[in-house]
Length: 125
Ligand SMILES: [Zn+2]
Image (cartoon, rainbow, N blue to C red):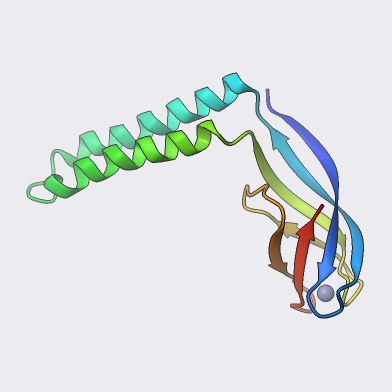
């Protein structure tokens, strides 16, 4: 099972340049889980490619497209050991407690807007 972990990060306001302590929740995958995820994704895309064989004319484009996309997505997942779930902390500009959805992106730094005051926030270590 993937494990979830809270790590300490900082919110930095784009204008104020003030750092505020925050937390980020990430989900970690073991090597085996990474492989399973990659294979599942590969099979899903190849399944779509197979269905596209039935579409006249367009299948000349769609079949190789989904075939290649499946490989690309699977390779990407193989190298991805963690998903960013969300970040939480006080906004450096308006000081409201905010929660940001990270869309599975665990890379730092990343930039988001405060949902309360739309100040640009840099999430960093
Ligand atoms: Zn704010």
